[in-house]
Length: 125
Length: 507
Image 1: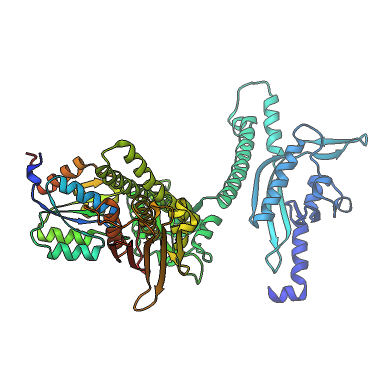
Image 2: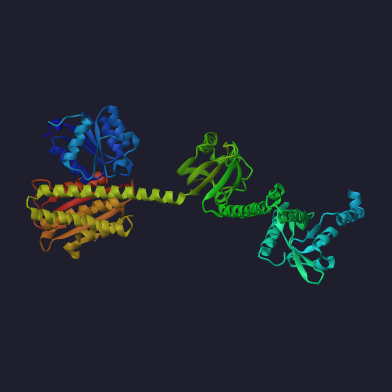
């Protein structure tokens, strides 16, 4: 169904284990391989820099009280597409990152699939 | 002059000159009593010096009977008071004021007279008003001339009549009255301006010199008088915030400017720190008669309190939204994971609801402390009390948990207790659970907790790791940066949990 995402390695940065588990389940259902999850900005930054063969990332905006944007910048520098997940509304993103693919919590599988595809520039098969 | 004054000759000379003058003069005290007058005055008013000296002016001269008399008195009185209060000379161009005349039969008759009067304040050495000098010109003859002419055969209106005739007289009176009214109005406007709750200031010229400002403006800028100073001299601490340039532009272009919730930082008291205030304001150009911008009218309100309240409210709503959305995502995860291990909707509902209630209980505990935290033994008791107090034996020191740790441990205790009730020690009447914990301080503050089950059925290693055990391991490692070890010894299930207590986590 979502051939374009099959076998993709997707980094998860999310401080809440239950939400991370949900994302893992959703990604596995789509045929992706979850990487992480990272529970802090520092951990996320290390993975964004060092994890091999990253195809995409799902980034919680507020990670344990810190904003995830350094991780986003590292991914951007590496050319890895990413999707923000946030409980804040549209206004939750600073100007620099506005327009970036975003999913709102709580999320559906379809929303995550669409956002990932949009970020990766993959057409639905 | 000085020598003359010393010898007293000057005052003698002045008094003589005063008396000899053909012009009528009267000296009036600030409370409007007659203090002195010259002969000419006595003559035109048909009065005796001893009869009127020391008398209140309007007791001695009340303009007689007639409808207009009180109005005539009022006009003269207003002019005198103005000269006294402003210390400036005041003119009454034309006023009708009747004078008493003793007729041949001894009856008092009032004669209409028309006057022009000048009131000059005379100041003492301290600059206070000592006397008011009234100089009157009797212009009644002009009026008589007009009347005689009017009594003539011809009805034609002559130039003279037109000049000093009734219409001119009436018009002059009206103009004079209008001036008085305008002045009253102006004074009232100044009062309003000064006591207005909003701040008001008038800046004059291209350098924005403070011409006047009201009390609210003074309170806003919190410094001594700035009247007469340029804006840049009066408010040097506002430099670099764009306000000088804004005023320069309004002055140059004549375009008004309106600012809303504009931040401005300055010292709000003489030695105080720089503070940020928020203001709504208007810069309105003031134009002179030629249409050139002569100054700027500044008017506005300090809206700092409402701006700060709105900021706080937005922050709280954002934070609330974030928490609610995160909690919903957590509940979504619990629902999804629970659904995967329950094909029967009835058992799904029971398990899902129990997990939801567990989460809700911990929320209750945290709400009680305004989300500052919860005690470990309270969290444990909340999650296990359904199985009986005597069956779960808690043993450990008092430990205050941060909100994130309380929420995590609440869910973990719920999963452990549910599992024990289903397969472990709490599934048989004699089974017990011992929960022992301790806190070590080195190298970091760390909680070590052991959940061990005794007296239950022989433990069988589960074929598949269920949601409960995955949740415990993941939660401890991921959310609390700790370690969890679950062991399935035959004599009893055992969980060892070790978490740092210092780590701050947001939920």
